[in-house]
Image (cartoon, rainbow, N blue to C red; front, side, top):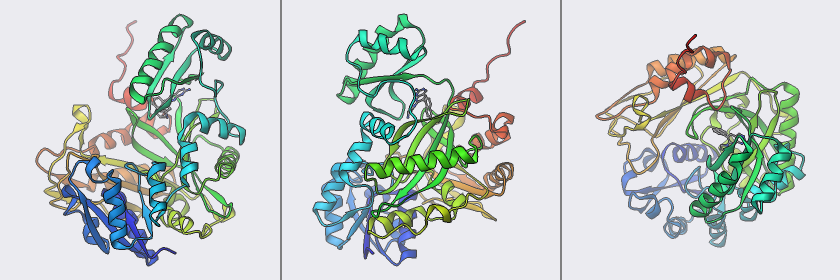
Length: 455
Ligand code: MV4
């Protein structure tokens, strides 16, 4: 096992990793930018190293400074958290070249699954379901027309190098295809420096369903069931829950086994997530793979009682997974609300500032993953996450009631500070949300209800 882990991140996830290290008897080293000098993880970790000025490019993304901090403190592993360098194969390779284990997949594997076209090809070969469409990038307008005709409209054109909803266009009629094909290619070239695009059938209002996996270096892989992350706005998730109430037990086991087989087939090690779209007939289609721990991992922890950060650290150190698939039982329902410093009444505009009052909720099965405390300054340089509020209950409706109770207890105040708490409470009261009939178009419709038809 490692002696000392450098945490190459900030905010709540840095504290989350430091806590796992402490419980495992591993020393932790926090990194902090000038803006984070007073952060909770700086006090909590065994050591802390200043890594640069607030701007991420000069601190949390500055590879030489990060590697230097690891070498100086004698760290033998680096946990990248999420965001920043967490999916950068080049960073993973530099860690290894400097004698520190990157807590994540091997660089070559990260590179493969990070390429959407390669990932789709490999996962289809491993038996994962994909939407009808191309795997090879589309070469010409004529080819695009042939493919779209054979798939049937509507189709979606996606940049191979895109992601997070950028570089995609929906084509509803054949007469729009030429124009949108050219637009998508041009945008892809300008934004991603890669004009390659592919085409697949477009699903209207799908649900976003993702499978949590961890694989060790002994050929074992386990799925920790699925999360539904359909409550999102402009590709920013707001509420996540586990399990999805739209999968049968048979489907859950089948897709979980396929996801694990797919990951093992490419030599994947560590925690990862396979992202799927779920259509209204119950069909799952593989979209992409995330080679990191995700923000919403706690909901999977709550329904399985497994500490996923500890599993990440364990498998990176070469140890086998602490659980096998048959040990895992899906119990109850968990939900997470992301409490952001944003004003839901002003189009979720950033509303950061100093937290004069910060009183997190408590009570049974109520978890708050946060780095905040009274007096903490939410800085404009980084994401606006104040806290992740996670609850567990035996059933989904009880989880909703518990979440609403906990959100009601949460006190956050400061000059210029607004939070997404009122938005979450309105969603929790919404009949459509309570019935579970939520897809990726939910938030938009919830915020701008269609005017009633005339006549
Ligand atoms: C789609 C789709 C409908 N049909 N692909 C957006 C992000 C990227 N990971 C995949 N995305 C989508 N791909 C087909 N063929 C709809 C979306 C989509 C979406 C997916 C997941 C969560 C939120 C979304 C919001 C809008 C569109």
